[in-house]
Image 1 (cartoon, rainbow, N blue to C red):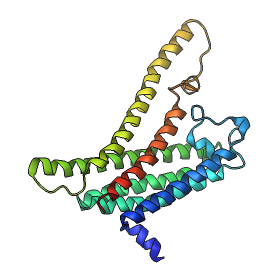
Image 2 (cartoon, rainbow, N blue to C red):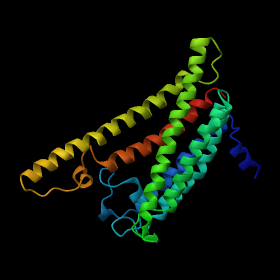
Image 3 (cartoon, one colour):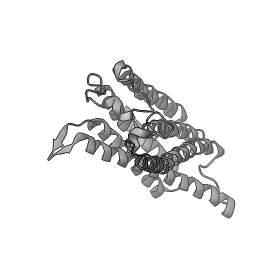
Length: 259
């Protein structure tokens, strides 16, 4: 119990947070790896055609036997991420107490919704009043993504405030240092490239569809026509999830440099 309180306080020293990050990464990706191993070979899972959540779908065309491994992974991320949120809060309190709490709450909301992604898998099962579980899954996934993105941007603004305070007003820099640039550059680069391809595809698809219709040829949906290409939604969804996890861990390591 004392260990749990210590973790949830966010008051972790450099060695403690780094060991925790290794543990968090190993357990989460260990379960994801097992979910991938359990995915039926005949269904040919690929990040260019299958979303990350398909690893946790018990629909017959996905993983009806080992889908629950994915749910465990997401629930673990949800709980483990709360500790990370408190660590972020404690470190960012050196810049702004209320600003640190805003960032922490956003990160905790992201973690909460990640857990709900595991509880409500991407399946066609009807939940209530004709609402399918997949519809709930999609909503909590969007809320999770929005919360994580807002958290990263918010904390970036706090770091910018810290840096500008020294540059413009000669104050003491509390937290921002050069080691924090790399994880932000990495995350923003992947986010930009992914967004670019997904937006560009909408224009390409419209042109291809118009040409096919003019020729009297059948043409698939935007989703199906992008499968297996660099414009595939599953491809960028997978890549952005990997990038998010890497950022959260990498940035925590960067924060720990001044412990």
